[in-house]
Amino acid sequence: MYSLAQHKYLPSFHHQSCTSRPLLSLARVYCTTTTTNTKSRSGDKQLGIEQRLVRPTPTVVTATNGPIDNDPSLLSTWSHRAWVVAGCTSLLISLGQSTKVAADLQMWVEPLIAGYVGYILADLGSGIYHWGIDNYGDGSTPFLGSQIEAFQGHHKFPWTITKRQFANNLYALARAVTFIVLPINLVCHHPTVQAFVAMFAGCIMFSQQFHAWAHGTKSRLPPIVVVLQEVGVLVPRSQHGAHHRPPYNNNYCIVSGVWNEFLDKHKVFEAMEMVLYFTLGVRPRSWSEPSSEWLEETEIPS
Image (cartoon, rainbow, N blue to C red):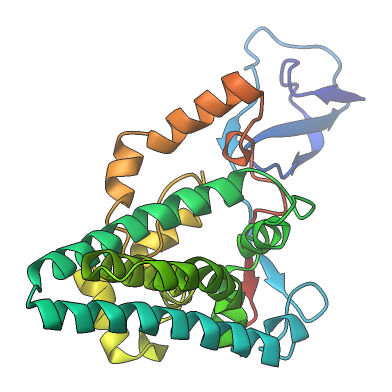
């Protein structure tokens, strides 16, 4: 006869088999035994049920279940390149105006301070935006649906960002920068304001490239990028790597990462999630167990 593991262990068995059901978190091990002796003995020991944490095994990506090198979605189009050119032109106009007026007025300290503040706040802005689209909305969300879908899909195939062509990776942010910065260039010529706008918008626009470098291997990155990552000017690879490990709710900032420690230590995003939940009743994705869409798949070595 067959007896469950919760019953007393019966000796004189002919065969014993154990099977473990793979789960995402706790796995319960079930054991069954077959025996010819149906009488239990007073000295028999109880078999317990062991609970243990089973880490999900990364899935190997093949050409049929993941993006490939020549995937059209990873390639740049002429419209992508045009938007990147437009974004860069807007930034250069802003930077040029700031430099020219600062030189005419012989005022350099204020624009330099404003540029530094823009760089610092751009990292914070990238973290807030990254947190929002990681946790809320989906591909059908108006205006931001494609960005949300791309960032959430990035958690399953994080290495594909290193295979995206430059303009393909930047064009969406470049388009936003163009529409925001060009009007500012037309109505404002103060060097301090223009220095802040140029640095803030430039870091936001190129944050996706900094993000891609954070997923690169040290041996394949330009030496200057590696140096900038190691000194903290650009988000370090190790710091951003923690964002792609459970519980997927930290290290959101992707410009320099300078805000990550403060935001995570003081649970700023968790507080914002509680506010949204109690006011709007919306749960963030980070509160749920990682689904298959969030489990990282591993690239086949080439």
